[in-house]
Length: 255
Image (cartoon, rainbow, N blue to C red; front, top):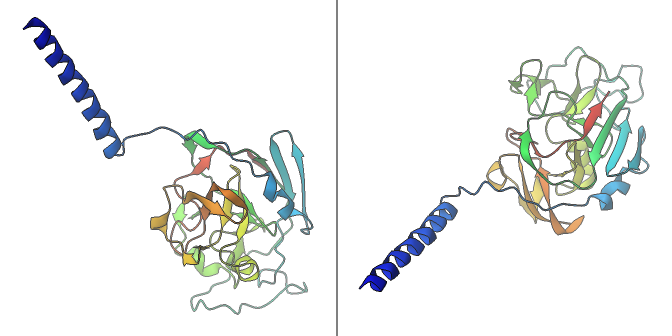
């Protein structure tokens, strides 16, 4: 009888332990961080031969310097510039801001082997990444107090970019000059944490916010990464490019 009681107690203990593990998995309480380390060296050459952009590999980092000038026309070029073009977009509420495009000197130090950060870091106002034409990506907020883009979006030119008060041209939302040129599912650039940015389509379908995690990305195969990689997507709705912060650990941005 004593042995029987011991066996019953042991069985109950094991059953409780298994039940607790299953409950934790089912409830989505697993807070573990992925240990997967990615390698983005295969896409570095996509920054070759871009006017105003130079890069080098230093140790485990890709260092990209850009003058930030767009390679397309805009009403934000000075009127004497051959790249000046009056607004011809589709926003009936378009309202030009008082700034003009000026050359910058921005250097991104980007990890070549990005991985998920244990503690996620919020993006800041200003450059958070670089697009394939050397123009900076900005986050989903307007300065100076992290306001929604509701009003500022009306100052975006026909290619959906604009300059801030120092003349730094940038994209908060889909860079349509690039997606029209390269395709809606194309690689568009990198955020400062080393993870790629792709357009608003994947596998023939349009990506929505519901397809993405809190950081506005997911893991899947892409044409550039046949084994899969975490990557961000542009979407048509807020937060457009990045959600609650960087998925990985960002390098440095200096200007």
